[in-house]
Every structure is written in C-alpha cells, then in structure tokens.
Length: 255
Ligand SMILES: [Zn+2]
Image 1: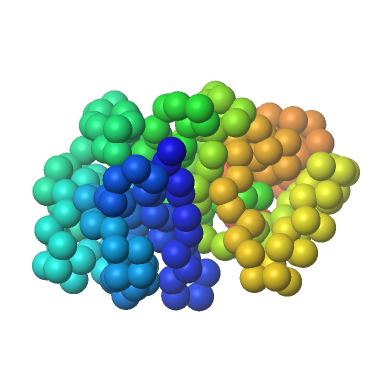
Image 2 (image 1 turned 90 degrees about the vertical axis):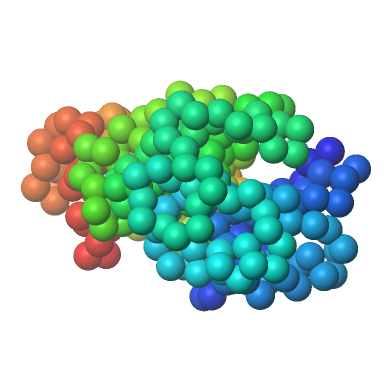
C-alpha cells in the first residue's frame, strides 16, 4: 500500500512523502528544505527514489541540491522552467511511472507560469497540486492570469470526487475565513472550519483535502454559482464565472 505523509517545513509548507509499504523507497514532492527529508530517511531507513518539483519558488526547490548530492534520486520537474537540477523535464500530458503507479502531468499555470501538477490515477487518485489548489482557497497569481488559474481549477473539478488533493501549504483556516466572507451561506464549509480549527489546535494537518470537498466549500471552485457570484458583485463584478474568479482572487489578496 502507498502512504502519503506531510513533512512540515518552514512556517506552513508541507513536503509530501510517498512511500510503498513493501519497499524501502520514497518519493518526495517539493522539498523546499533538505533537512526534514534527511531526518525522515534516517528515521525510517528508506531510500529516496525520486523528487517531484512543481514550480520554481525557493520554498519548493531549496532542498533539491543537497538531496541530489546525497542520494542521487530521479528529479522530475517542469520543462519551461529555470530550475537547476531537473533530470526529466515534463509538461502537459507527459506520463511516467513511480512506486508502481502511473503519473500524469497537468500544466497548471497561474501561481507561476511554470507550475505543473502531478496526478496519479488510482483508488483513490492522488493530485499533487502545490500552490494551485489549497483547502478552501487557491494560490496567489504571481505570474499568471486569473483565466489561467480558473482554467486549472476547472480541470481539477472534473477529476473524481474522491481524488486526494495535496496542496503545499497549511493555509486552510485563513482560506475558510475568507470563504465565509465570499459565500456566507455554506453549512458544509462552516462544519469543515470547525473540524479544521480543532485539528490545528492539536497541531494536525488539515490536508489532504478531496476534489469533492473543494467543490462543496472552496469559493474559487464555485465561481459559476449564484451564491458566490452574489458576493463578488458587491466587490464590483458582473455575473460571470471568469470575472467572479478574478474579483475573488483580487479580494482575497486584500483580505
Ligand atoms: Zn509558490
């Protein structure tokens, strides 16, 4: 069986570690720091088979050099990027196999232009989407446009409801508080906020989420709905999913 665990890094990053129970090998996603990964490998005696990189930001790539030097893993990352140390550059639609599972690359520009996400289909499917989709929110637009991010989230919404969503940051509480402002009437979101507040009090991660859950509670996944568009109109928008998305994203930046 494959397990996926978060290694906390910096203030609120998660480095995701995939491990097959029956083998000693692991794959890590976006090691912004090397030390949490080194500690994990030493603690478990596992060996680092591969590193997946989603985009060029330092808090996702900072540990790459040291981990490569120490363990010589396969390094798979975006093909339209300046990241040093990528061995296998991949883009939209590329496929590869790791840990006995198939992975497919989705180009998901928006947060950055080089941002890719990794989808591994199965029961359940796994989506490593880093700074594209968070629980209750989405990434800031540093390089891309609202249209690009909206398109990425629209594609995610078409995945199976039980797809596990591994975002790269513990932003859930702040996202859900914004979601209350953006869509006041949403009881599923209110219930989730209570659960997540309890989890954080116990220092537990609120991730992974699921696509089904995000479609129910995340305003950025719900911009086609009147209940979200109503709030955006008050911020100066028209009734349209695309424009609502852009308005919400700008509103969240100020929130
Ligand atoms: Zn980033």
